[in-house]
Image 1 (tube, rainbow, N blue to C red):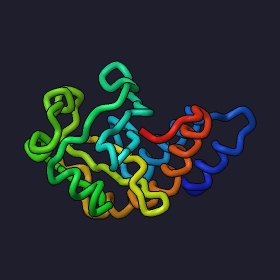
Image 2 (image 1 turned 180 degrees about the vertical axis):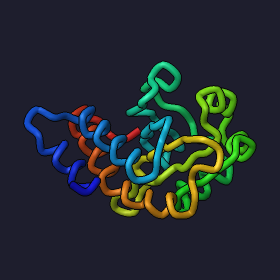
Image 3 (image 1 turned 90 degrees about the vertical axis):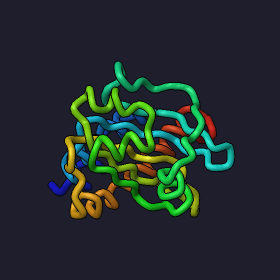
Length: 166
């Protein structure tokens, strides 16, 4: 069964909720582009804040309250231009993320942040981290297939919580 069909099948199983949807998205991400650390964060571009709503490493990256954006070329690329951000070295990551030491301690030295866009607005980012140099041009292109499933997950989360994004 193709990756995307596995995701849909996981959502269609009776009794599945938003947590299961994110787990299925993580599996899809692992199969499409590869991932060690996987998180999803909502994006409120008006208030310039985000909130982590899913993490496969909750001890290191717990689901948490809101935090302000880091105003760097990351926010310009991901939130304003609505393009996937790529950094394939820990030095490039350190230029945009203050938690680069924690990232490296987890065995990760590359990242892609895939914007999830609904109605023209970035509502979240899918954040994938892996070993140095992992996110090749081919893998970055493959990550586009995560946008629609990501939107489904974020909207399902929002609906189940009765909350607005971020």
